[in-house]
Length: 640
Image 1 (cartoon, one colour):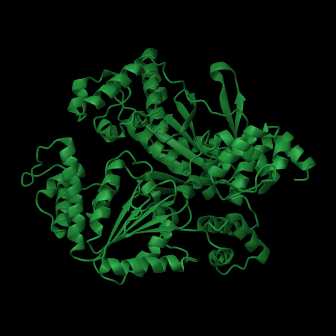
Image 2: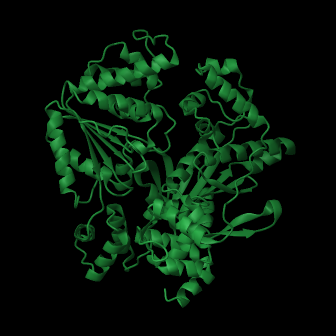
């Protein structure tokens, strides 16, 4: 558990950014006093008491055990594998005392593991000065490749900043993604580990040897998944020992300046929007009302891949010829604990900050955009402080309590929106609100209230798990995106195929298996076109997303696997026969599967029939079942 999760467990998530800004980690935490907490802004006596009690309780708890995978059965998975090496360890061993060297290596291991765990990676093994890491096992995430690259950059930075024994340390990292068989236990006792069989770990290790000190090198398989989320240097094709053909590789330079995850992952050239005419018409009608001064909010809800970002892009394109201001805000899964991150990011891009701009240049650029919004001088130091910029003598930062400073900063951001809206109608798009930080959520509440009297159309997109508090207000419209019908799925397949004529039977299979999710349709069609064969496997771009859903349902995973072995649709009676699970437990497990919306249910047990919501999800669940031959044999005997 990290500090942020610990604070959330205490119900004190409001202090996550405070602890982070003051660099409070597990080493500092036990030493905090009441005075320390008061100094960093924990003013309420009840909060200080709760924190001090929790800190005292930590001292009596045993240290956390090392990560251990939750499953011991082997399974086929897509993994992103990271291999990290300490540069110059041989030279260090020659000039350092063994005890000093041990201290250096231990500090390096702790630092690398900390960076990896912050992105939920799994440290599989320490090999001298090497660290082997898996992303996608034992818990898959929809963005494992991105997590691996961000973790690698974090390792490079953190190791480079280590100060131990007056030694300047550097690391280098290789990353590759691919299908492996993972999970067999080998060795005994402390030497026991989860083996991974496949080319991917070898490729990651080889790429690491090619990396320059302080750099990250990735394979083409990883590069495809992270798309334009990062900036790269193309290293061309390189010969890798143990792999027959030369492999393309890239050095990762850092996060890209592309603000939109949708644009970074999907590219600027968008496929034609199909099946959303009514939704686009609704947005245009709300825009017409907003332009007339009757501010509007549209809440767009939908599962991943359904087209939330795509429909906002279509609206933006349709308004390109109209005079208006376009403000874009993006929440990030990695910045949920960073107060006002979407607004800071928007100001950064609006002011056109360059990475190498000195602080004085950034401050001048910020002042320029605030001047265009006709903001009062008193707002400048508050927003400069928000952007971590030094305030000028002309605009000194007022001496305020943390709470009052936050309130004044929110007011300044509201005034910026109002100032812009008085110049031209504003289209304000706030994406991925399911990842919003608490302070940005607080500001959104204020914006929703203010928008009703401004020429502003605010569009908020989010996944179904986010519960917006603004529904029911007269200026708020809820728009839930449904899946494409069969006609639109077929049209989308044919559009993606372009001039390549696909057999009608193959088009029908793609339409059936993708269940009307536009992203699934696009990716499966591209996979078929690229492979040149009518393969219906899970595209690499969707594999992590589907597996992450299954892993979050670990308690019902076995039932999902057996059901998938039977088929896309499986009757309760047959599942009961082949699973040997007591009926009460089986019905309870199936109920959780239905609640998760991974499967649908028709009828009531024992006559119920279940079907996977996505055919591709069924295939993802089925892969590990190769390790359950008894269940498959029983299903075969029963006619599945």
